[in-house]
Amino acid sequence: MNVYLALVLVAALPAAAIAQPERPSDVSTPQPMEPRSAPEMDGHMFAPSLLVDTPFRTTTFKLGILYGFGHATGPQYDASGNVVGQADYTFAAFAQVFRYEYRFLEWLSAGLSFLTSLYSGIDGPSIVSIGANIGIGLGARVKAGHRFGPVQTAFIVDASTTPEYGILVAAPILKAIQDHVIDASSALQATHSLTVSPLLAASWAPWAALGLTANAGYVFRSLRLSGTNIADQNGIDLAVLGDVDFKKISSVPIGLNAGYKLTTPLGSGGVTRIDDISGGIFYTGRRELGLGLEMGWRSFSIRPPIDSQGVLIQLELQYYW
Image (cartoon, rainbow, N blue to C red; front, side, top):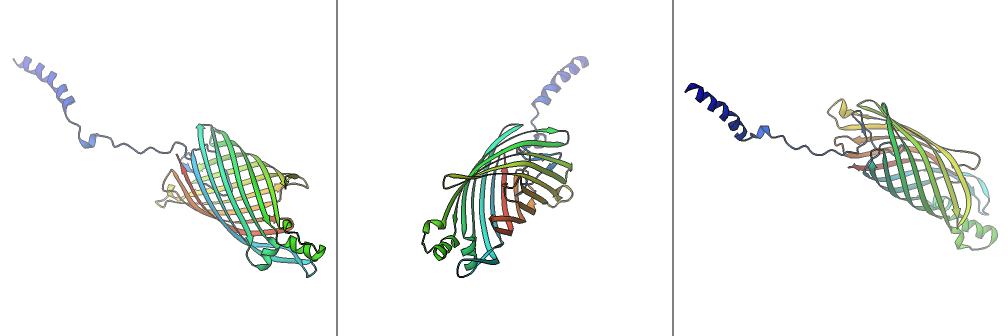
């Protein structure tokens, strides 16, 4: 009888265990899905930047709003319209960029962008000498990459087309003074630029709190004035950026970055030289969100022979899927 009872208990215990209801502590809580295409490597999240492209292939939307102000050095005219020296002028700038990029494969992504820009003199003499310029640009890009050991790399091709409309206040005034002709058409200059920029990008994270990114590329720009090709320009882009994420070493979800970018001409008819230095602060509390503020200094030419220097401030919002 004891043997029979033991056999019954042995058969009944597994069934009772299976039938036992699950306790709340036994049920695992579903974890929210993390973005599969965030620019992360070796525990470091790379922040977006005004100066540098990262090599990560992502599905992302980016919005950038840029404000700028500065001073420019240009020709000074006398009452007869003759150049009598140099003068300092002031200007302001505003730009917006919208970009959407989609990752088709782990190694391949492509995207489209839309850009608007405006700069203008901000006092009487500056408005006359600098005038104003409005640009509307459309761009496309393809990014293909691979990771080699601790370094993420990509080859990026950017192409953009930008019609620009310049309001040149000084031109019709000088023409009226020197040639005694009122020509309102000389106050409007319509140009069109086609830019193609292949570049190499590489990122490395020696520690989870530190990321380094570098770019090296070639720039080709074709300029047309009123439908006529006026110049083909060539140049080189070089850029480097470092960013630190304090969330990796503390409880503060803040990141800082700093970088430098140089655009330098190739040959006597190359692109105009541009020097950029920038630093920024970013929120790093959410993996799918890039949100920050960058401030930088730029040396460039508004248009020959007006050399300019200015401070740029860009608000950046980027979301990853």
